[in-house]
Length: 457
Ligand code: GAP
Image 1 (spheres, rainbow, N blue to C red):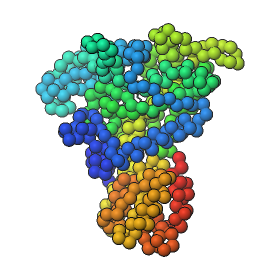
Image 2: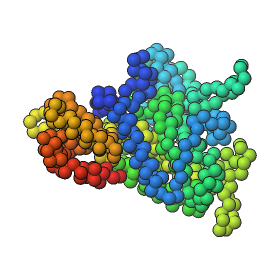
Image 3: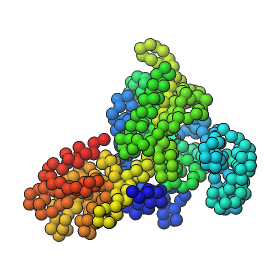
Image 4: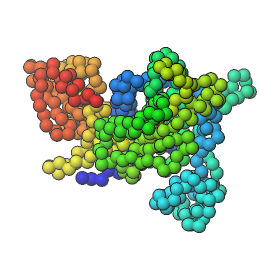
């Protein structure tokens, strides 16, 4: 089996319409990417699968869709204004910018935890160990400065007056500030969770690992509000559920692992990442965090509104503890692209590129392929119109049937449906399976059920 590299994945994505460089005709814009016609379907399906598993199928979880722009006090309460920054330094020779802590951790192969070091300690370590610029090899570094990760913009109500506002760097604050609104309107009893999916923005300097770390990305986040005495059980339960989700959606167990954090925030009882073995190595896919009462306490303090919960059975009043589960939709999509991709050597010596997506997240569920354009277009259009009411279908009538199968393999379409004379005369179709390449014949009126059963997640 051929090795899957990030470079191959980037090329596949550009070639088949999964992902294009952002602002492409302007030579791109660093660490931004645009999802194309195939990629947008894939990412939408990933988000739908997450929402189904964690919101639709869980009667104690409620969704919200909060604003990207929030009252700036939110980011003071959360601690982001004061301390959401990375230690950065510039190579004086090639002018590239790097994260000092990452360089130290890479250099020491994880032996040195730079997280707890001051800027001066990091500068000394880099000097003592003669760490060189990964880009040009020189050792001429600027001093290390903290680099703010929140994007700022401004809002002026009258000309000349401007207030700083921030593009949210995480979606979860929209869940905390709506805790009481959701609890009141749903009459939810603790433990219950609030979930949302939405864009976040971070002014990251990154080594450019495609979708892995970008400046604009989508998060799927969930905050479970609970009694402190139940919190560790709930935390462990989310670890399992989070692992099962990524496993079920297409990442194999041997490429997934828990990474429990040794160093915890002062308010946290536990924190854990799930890591996936990307082509660039083991990296964080998602986080599960025990956040204590920190978030709601801080928002109570800064807003002046009590966020206490009144237990209707015991009449006890308390600030709930929060268990957070957070996963990036783009990062998970990248993991699924890396995992699904195969360059398969066929018996006839050819290589077929295939994306073995779980059918539930495949961009298109089926391809409608009229065998001979002039004979089968009308029937194929009728079949497309019928099936596209149920799921995303793609239609392809150009080139040989073999080439059309290959194109659909490359975008991960699990079922290719050939429309031929048998379809016109007897209402039967041939369905080819993407993974086995085997074909079966089915009456047309059984196709919806056949595919619906396969794509259930
Ligand atoms: N509210 C908690 C929080 O935001 P985080 O570990 O900073 O925690 C959670 O982010 C998840 O969001 C990560 O595990 C990752 O999947 C995704 N993520 C974070 N930063 C990202 C970035 N710059 N680009 C793409 N995904 C990112």
